[in-house]
Length: 119
Length: 294
Length: 224
Image (cartoon, rainbow over all chains, first blue to last red):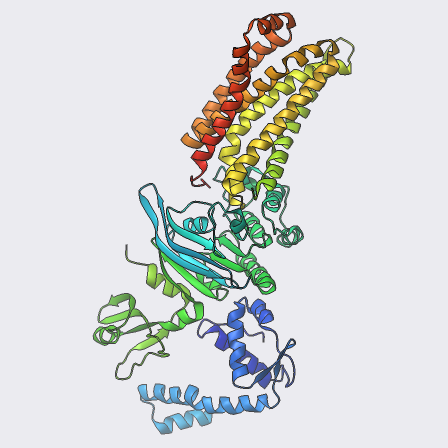
């Protein structure tokens, strides 16, 4: 939760990603409470509405659930779900751009595969 | 109380023959932090002073909870416009000591929270025995901030509150502001020149230019709806042909443009064109909108 | 009127503080000068001498405040959330109350110091009150001019008025109060109709300048 916000991406997306990262790294465990939107707002000096927007993404996709009057909690099975989703996104976010850039530079498939093996 | 709104309708303000605000329509909802940005002389302070009922409008109306604000104590008690203090002005605030100024604020503001003011004085390390005119610029800003926050007014306007503060004090101010906002849900309108670091604090931004409100919009929505594109001039031109363009710049065969996405459009479709699309931050958007070439 | 209470509270305390400071200074000066005199020091000497100074400094304060209040303090009260009419009313009421206190203190000191002359004061109290209102009326004029034509002209007018009042004050003190017999003669020779005008004209003028002041600042932009 202590990553620093960047300018590259919408703040609320960064908030939801950071919570996901913490769940993946076992910094926040399943069935544990996540910080409230006001706590997040103060920590990052952002508007509570923005923090809420980030948290709501996770509520909508089932990563978090609301306990009325107490706060937001991590759903059981959330960690596995996040890992699965990130795997799916890995192709779109990384592999495709990698190949596009490689094409632009005239790197052949074989060359690229060698690079990946060596990396 | 949650329904309360501050509404400016067809608000015009002229100083003599010079009209500085042109038919302003603005609605401030309760429970939001608004960023109020505009260039020097755009009319920020004038609008805040008229909307808070400190100065009269030339025409048009300002209401809060449906009550007219002008010379109506009940309505004015809901609004606090903590003015920027400056050593150059000969006004009463400057010749008084900080503690006397805070005392006056406590006398005049029905919801003023003395204990909270005291807490803020401690936290900023302000010497209340000093005269305001003897304070540094940063300390004057702190006095303005303390009065605004401790006023506990439903609608609180701050004019350049962080102008004199260093980066650490600014960060502290934003945190205190968010704390107070989280606890009370009061409405804040904050004018500032230091846009980028404050952008994340504002739920909505109001952009004013030459006495006109250019837009009032959710900050995230605004940032997501404006992009910068660049590439070969002809290609850029054909992409921007049917779009709202805020600004263009050209060098050689290359052209850049700041454009608005259409409603519902999530991403700019650049298929068939070889152009770069980049997101913009609030400050860049502001400059593109208001930074006409002189 | 909503907001009047807090204004009277603020303006009264603000004016009282200034008055108490000046009074303390006056009594201090008188005490020191009395100590330096060869005569044995007595409370009644100090009080007697202070009385005149306090009455005089009350005049001065009315003038200073007339200029200062409208140009400097009033804008602050409006920026802190007061509506305009209650602030002006509070200013006026606070001023009048404090000047009444000033006069009362001066008169009490005077009576303690010179019990034999108290009958004179009883005879002339309406004149004293009229003089007070005349002072406020003059202060009102200064406020009106400074609100209308700006602080600098207000300042000049204020200086002129101070000098004028000082001369009048000295004249008044030496002629009518210290030399009791002359004033009694003059007072007896004034016809009753003129007396009524002398007594009420200042009050009317005072009220008139207040209304004029309100008319000027009602829609004026704050210069801060």
